[in-house]
Length: 266
Length: 266
Image 1 (tube, each protein chain N blue to C red):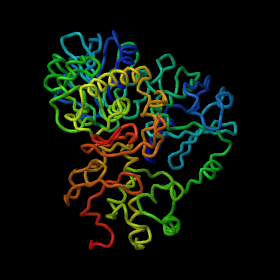
Image 2 (image 1 turned 120 degrees about the vertical axis):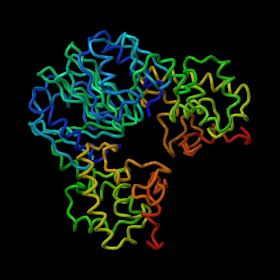
Image 3 (image 1 turned 30 degrees about the horizontal axis):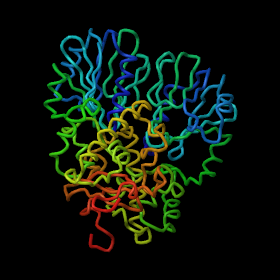
Image 4 (image 1 turned 180 degrees about the vertical axis):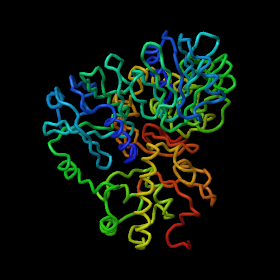
């Protein structure tokens, strides 16, 4: 699942390729990709306008069309953007195709069809409607602490809860907790204030590093968990073997030595 | 993980876009994507030649360069091909870029860096070296039965063993066993001859259907497991709830009613 760093990568790619080109046509190859908007409404809002700029909140990317409308992209498990020549065949799994007057297209590809395209008047309203918390890179330390503390349940699933903080998924929550040396199943109310603070600091560190490497696991530092995120891999700190467990129905990878279960001696 | 139907989709895309164009340049953005070949060797073999045709065996795609060499692509977990204008920015996660004299490029994208690019004299020799069994769509019923029978272990992991039959992965083995109404953990030696025959027939049926829909889970028939392949989804036959289990370290989805554990009454 693309998380905050991958969406930020798509944002920069779109900024770099597709701004300020007159839009000639919008094609949808699979109706189900549209959420709360018809093709007619979407095409009507985009045609003869251009993308003016982009904004990201958590895993959502809003593209300003400059006429009071924003197109909002969610990428599901396998979404991607491809800027190609208009005469070229559709990218594999292209669901929405925006053709520009400059002879190019932007293909929104989404193999597993779990992403969605919306059209809204106000991105902030959508963020409210979806009950997204503050973006994980925008939230301040104090607000993070205030929002985290009252949450019940395990820290891993709490961090993945988009209404607490928006943008974290399965992979980066594992990394943040590895960096913070906290077991993923630790109940939030068992965390000390310094531990919560450490989680906040590591969240920022991990996300910034992941954006630097465009969300490519393989380019993350060797001291990170992500490149070793499989059962039986060596702990990047040399402390043991990476284990896989389930926390609230999701896979979690961790090092039992670096991240002991709460209550055990650290 | 792309399996046989997805690789067949990439094969047809490459055939459709990239044959018979003079190759001007080959660029590698991440050295680690190359396996047993240097960039110099690869570029030397491709430059000024053209792709003549393609061949698929299991999850491997061979591209004939017409000078006695074949470039072999493996796609790992997240590979894809994109045919784009040469002046356009690199596709996100492009690892190998083949530039044609016709003003286009073929980008081989691979986010997680688990795919590989090779150069070989003879694809069949590579197939032997990798100990791949016959392609899952080429193998005959009798040979399949002969090869399957002596295998130990659970049917699911046996079908995923590329040396028995090449091309099946986690998703399609679940579908084949759902269609055949066989529990994924059934030991191969507990299967009857009619059950083995049924698995063979369902393997062909499932793969052909998946190729028809270009490996898009969402376009598979509603009576298939793939669109319901998550814990707690309703059984597509209305017989219960889809369960998730682990067979030899891999996730397996199945319906406990349609696919009872061996030994239990059906």
